[in-house]
Amino acid sequence: MSRSQIVAENLPLLRRYSRALTGSQASGDAYVGAMLEALLEDPTLLDEARGAKAGLFQLFTRIWNSVAVNGDAAPASNASEHRLANITPLPRQAFLLLSLEGFSEEEVAFILGIDVTEVRRLADEAGQELAAEIATDVLIIEDETFIAMDIESLVKKLGHNVIGVARTHADALALAGTKPPGLILADIQLADGSSGLDAVNDLLKTFEVPVVFITAYPERFLTGERPEPAFLISKPFQPAMVSAVASQALFFQRNSRNRPPSAAAS
Image (cartoon, rainbow, N blue to C red; front, side):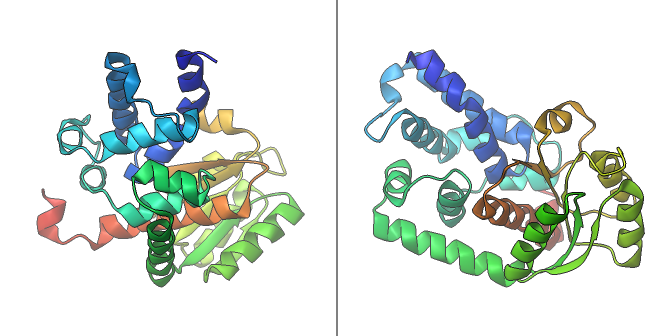
């Protein structure tokens, strides 16, 4: 496989990972773009000792941890994105590489430039920090009964409270009216032909909440009027991916709310 084919095959994964790190697709893409520019200038930067994919993620990590790139990234659309684009939380990187991207501990150690023992320590640290901070009320918008049950069981195990499961646009609005959720997990194509994307956009007119779309129709998310911040998981999904992405969505939301006024103005 040629170098360009390797990059093309892994580019969507890099964009997903960079989005999870920064909380913004625009900010994440700035880092991916910087990595591609560096690779074009010097192809020897790609270390394929653990495979092409791990090599690309390793190079991305080197760019992400570069102070110069952090300062030169494309302007963020809001203050919280700007703050997130300027931090490099190693525990979160380890957590995402293991849970979201599915790398082995050995591959994560290679990507981050640390040993496996440190990978395990960082992942455990991230899990404990997230578990202590992210418990919230969750609204599930999903029309398939068994998938809804799986998602409900999963989020309860994470310590969340489920407000209810909505099967239609109207159901979602009604449930959110009983108690505003702290997190929304939503399908896009709903039972009566209505749109979960439209339901979420309507809900976000009245309150601010992170959103994770879990859908078999990812192209509708990419082409529709999608909210920010929002995250995307394609069906069929792995439970670990839902856990990781939901935790990240809540993490970014809490960080933007918990910053002191002086930080928000910076």
